[in-house]
Image (cartoon, rainbow, N blue to C red):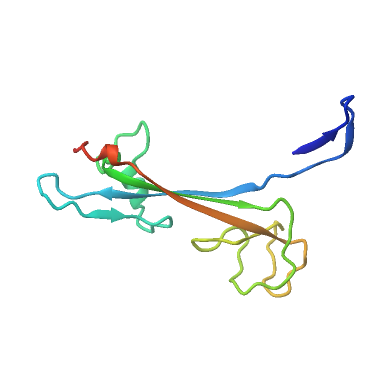
Length: 147
């Protein structure tokens, strides 16, 4: 939020939204799941939308004993953060499939209407632009922690 003020502290104009809203946050892992006694260490990479739940299985849940969880075997972490514009700004029809909130691995628009938005000829006040940022962090300090 931004509010302009004069030197006396009085507000000038209306308060306006200048930030974007975070609408999606995902983590994905690459783990060393090879047998400890072998010299070959193949890596297993899980996607952001892993249908088998590999990310949750390897990372585990803090405070809950899970035999399959081996967070010490994670070698890199990928982060996906998606934000949307504060106001609608899509005036032209889009060629992508319809989505009320998020669709697919890399969403690029967000429906602002609770009941959903039409795909063909959408009104100007329904779709907000989305931006997706993806980064990866290596965690090589975990490489010596074997189970």
